Image (cartoon, rainbow, N blue to C red):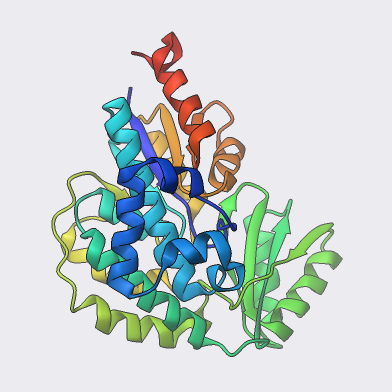
Length: 315
């Protein structure tokens, strides 16, 4: 069975996530504690006790990455399986690079902490906005953004699944695009509670600064393919990683395309690793026949183990 791993992005976090694993798994506890040592911050305390800090991008990103890496290691150890290909939503792409062996855990933790700070600082609070557009075709959303940008910049930011595209940009531009989309017959538009218009050209300054940080990091060859949000295709080679991650912070996330590429490669099972079930729900909308599993706690780990122990799991 060909298996793909997909890793959670920012926004999936919730207070108390990973607590069972932290208390019962040395593998999990060691990774969280290692990340804490790297950053000089008690990440476990933030995960379990400090919701306000958990939602600060500079902490959210390394916490989700550390949690996802730890769960991946637990899954591979308990089930003696490994992915043939991997991807992630935004931040999750860094976890995918760790999974591929291209980026060390230590470097990834420090890098996403700095990436989070840059994203947080890029656009002052209240200047930008993001809205999820439900039930509209790509061309309708893109046309509305283009027209609304005559008022103020607004752009498609996340192509998550058929019928869900997130737009982002200056607050005035998002409001204008929302008005145009309603006039075009779109009935569901959901404003998102985010700290900035991520994956839009408004993050250009963060992208430039991130590029300087990325040039200080040595990336190794990928042992398994990583599918990037920037194109929805595999990252061609080690040499393209820095350019891809530089673009990624200010480019649209083509998550739907990533999953289609994964499926086209022959993947039969996709396992979502990290907090939340959002990616699994996206995948089911992209291809309802795809088998998906998700691991974030003891209960979901037990379900995955049970799946592999019966005939369905192919073992």
